[in-house]
Length: 191
Length: 301
Image (cartoon, rainbow over all chains, first blue to last red; front, top):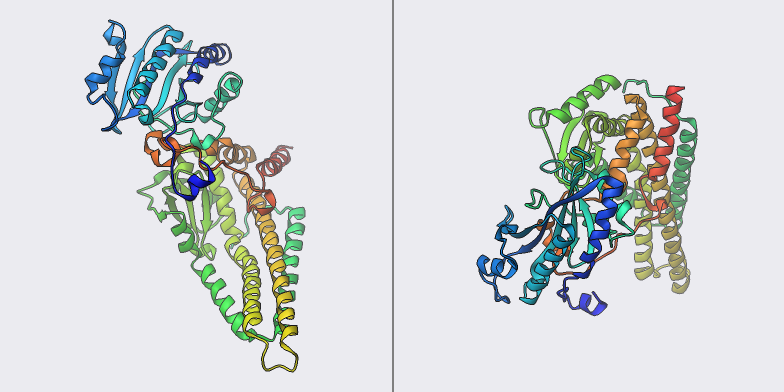
């Protein structure tokens, strides 16, 4: 925000930055070689439901828009306990998964849902369980940065693992440098 | 207070002594300054004394209020009470009251005007992040603050700063309204009082820095005693890494609940900066870990 915006109390609606998502497949290779973590096959988009400014009013509209292929069970739309909507995509091929989530993002932006998008999440699990536990890579659409989230319980997270993930991925991905923004996503529907 | 098995660090004592000496010297300068000013010294002392005393006397309530903390019973927080019970037995201390702060920031504090009125508090964030052993180490550090009567010491030290601030304010009023009734002409008096104000500002700054330095030494002393009390400096070191390093910055707040905080519509508001250690009340993590490492070697060697 510029000085004038600060003075007049204006906020700009930030357009989501989507292109960084395509850096994920490289990062996935690093995660596998360094930390033995592989894609869980699930990725998701979290957005706030609301009214206005969108031609997509019902869940069905959104679902129709995002079901690009016939295998409908690969895309699900759920509402979490905090009232946020999650579009969960399942695809064992990680590159295809990223492409699908990116495409879903793009079409939501085109339909005016851009400002309501909160984050995209990709699940990673230990290649040889139990390993060190699972990690979600969270992509903050507005900031265009990634951060790891490794929940170990209802409100517990493995900070050491998260910091290790950051140190390995900082050359592959634009990681969120401000650690106070590594917000938790408790009980999220993306595994 | 019964003497505990806590040994003394002479270097630290010497440094603390000189910091204290510096503060006393400042007191002397301020008093002579006030006498020269000719303001009603008694009044100044009464006001400042009352302020400092109330800050000291109500320290537990003030600290608990500002940290959103409340006292808890053993039934409500068995884990916390058990650890404090154990530590108090070990250190041969009266058990302080125990409180909990609902904040997510990992932190703990001890407050209260005397060991008899002490409260020891931990935040939810601290209890969620540390295991039992580490929590015990942090509470041992806080109990050392109680045993060392750090609230009293720091209140007295901070009092100097307040006194200096008051003098500078009086000098300012003097400069604005004074000037009449004396044998000297007005201009000179104004000039004199401006200089007085300037000097007391400088004194205030120095007092502030000295107080901070003293606080850092008291923290190191509490680290030391706490670590010796539990006999495992490395556990306190690991707890410190968990609550003061990068990990402390990672929130447990949910992204979906923090919409108001930049997550949705705003560009980043403020980048987190770091304050220089000279202005901070706590020593740097490196210094504390360094001391704990040395202690670990001493205890094992």
